[in-house]
Length: 287
Image (cartoon, rainbow, N blue to C red; front, side, top):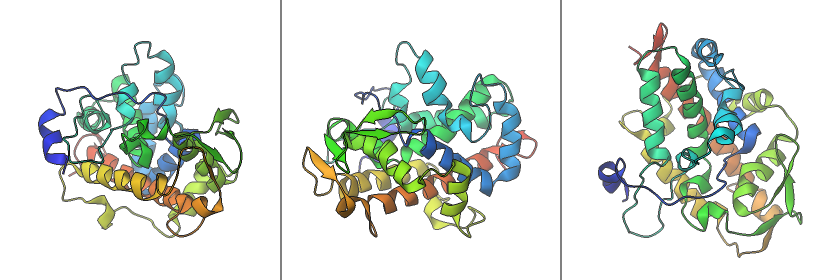
């Protein structure tokens, strides 16, 4: 397992970069946030007040995309690009994180936990919302072919796919999971409507085994699960240049099914993390 080595090397070594590594697109990230909001509505309302200090996306649902839609646009040195992913390996070699997502997430949780209500806390909340979403996009936990950015595919015969903003983006395997699959799943529904549909009769994160609440760093196990899905579903059976059609997209355990489940898991786990690090009286460990 790579996890033991990660604990030693995470703070000191830099991982290789995966360029243009967005996850889920604007709709997917907002669906994750909307799911969490439905599970912890009072905490989400509390965070809305703090998030009002952001320049854009200054509410709980939209803040999920603040790192992509504002920070990325103003990050001249691409300092934060490596925060969005972790290139977990398919072999038995040691995984080295450096400044990857698996360090950025607990670092930003620590800021939330500190108990302030200033703008840095607002930015940290937005990062936590965003990074939990990124963590559950399987290709963000894979170092294979730059997380699928270098794996060429078409989507239902198309070389471009519309994203949440209505823009056309070139299809690679990574962007097919970021946007094409999420947009097909949503079929034009807004994130809050999709959140209600995906949650179904689930009303709380509490007691759900997929959280792994007894693990002091549960995001490491979550990353393992996402990495496994990259191999067993995202890359499975594909050759470079493949066209993604119903045989890949639809059916139990197929891409759309996995996307919906990962969005659900991300929302449930986000609710857990934020509820445990934001008390009713301000940020900090829930008691």
